[in-house]
Length: 391
Image (cartoon, rainbow, N blue to C red):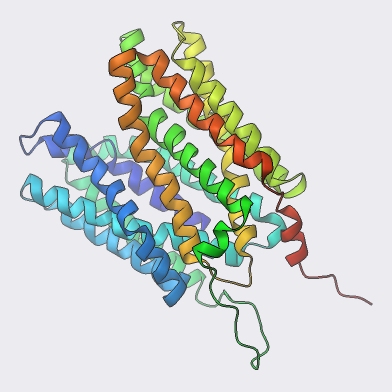
């Protein structure tokens, strides 16, 4: 799963820098080109409930593999789009497959990871995505020299390769606990049941804030601020690179801390650090301060992710499936990533970047509130761990 995530992230990174230029090649404006980028995320959000239901009904492995192949087919078809409308539709449909493999991947990690190392497994999985995402744009820029359509073909091939790796390596993996054949298996956890748990509600809040801050504003608004203040595009690239480096550094520690100290402290610290990093960026005019705060915001993201994902896994537990519970968690994050740049962009246009990043910090701090009253779930993971054999 970790190796597959690395390949998927490389492929996604390959097409990311090329997609806007490819869209512009059909003689459309900046807004239309940006819409192609947003269409993928919109279809992810739209299909998330159905994706979660498919995982609960069909199982994690077939939905994961099908999702990869759907995105591969979408990418290959995108490479041969003959009009802007075709490009928009074909790229958007890839978001359906993306939801399928994202939700099922989370469910697979719940099934396969021993309960007491869920934080470390989540950190390793996120790290592989991050490293692949950092390498992908470099390869994408090089491949663009052979034509704007080539990266999409390479992405499709990478996804098929990832599907092959998972199909082979998980062909004999046991994804369900061994149970008494006379005892019916536990039913899938429903969203209503999960919402009754304050830890799950807190995870939804932090997922929305994480999407808003780290997948939305940091990616879409931070580069614009860097260019507007320092009048150099390289500053935007370095800022994002340092944020990614901060996330990577934190992930190496956060997973172990989540499994030893607890999930809740990490999430709380991650939300506060994210708020501090992004909230102060809008007031920074000095280049060094901007770069330090960018790295700090990335550090907050790396601290936050393993704890909140392990919490959701603890709520579901190894003995049950929870496709719709996981897809709702993913929807909260996607909703933040879509709404954040739009609303913060409006604030920036009307009131300036200082207010825009201040609103972003407020969103992160508001997510702290439900976590203050949420219970720690690490003890649930320890309770699931099989007792050591006695002599």
